[in-house]
Image 1 (spheres, rainbow, N blue to C red):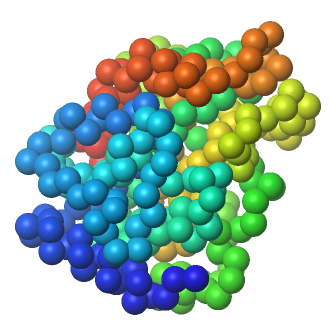
Image 2: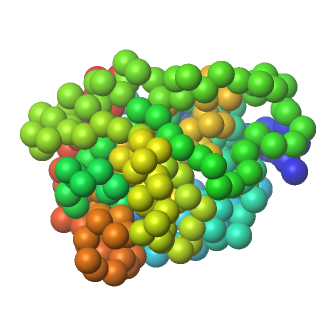
Length: 273
């Protein structure tokens, strides 16, 4: 769908707006987790709608802007809002920014999301560091012609999420909350929440949390050799775990309650990498 030149054109547009800044760290802020944008100093804000080839986020709780600036002494680039398969985008569009980040010199990607808890020991407000994923229900984001400029045709996925960064983030979460979780994230295509039967099946398969994002971006980041770490905010328990209906409002409300803890966790993590 996209040619290498399309990624280059987008990167060049952003580069011209960055005033010489060279971010090595990128972060994607999930539903209700945009509060971190308040901590970015000397920020440069670019609307997605201005950037060539960028999709536009359509989900409540996603601002739809790229922010470049400083957190502490580190220069970062942040996506305040992401794209999802369920919005009608092709997976190549969903993950387009990741390859642009690679061309901008990004070496580390921090993925965040709101997720449903499958593990019955979890509770809303917990943070789970992702150590692996399940993805059976959508096409591969690498389907189609391989762009050799970014990576090989066939790639090993044994360590999609960098082990050293994963453990470092888990320790920081534990320091702030006293109950850091670590587990497998199941990627489902949405926009419907999963059925209780699907959740029971995912639990048997080893999933601890479920959501509608993160995995496509992680695969593309791994393909182009960006060190990746991911954290899920457990905003609700998945279908059938509790006797109550699921809603996006609950997701946003829980994210609102933990947003300042989330902000401090990510700030501390950025300082350490």
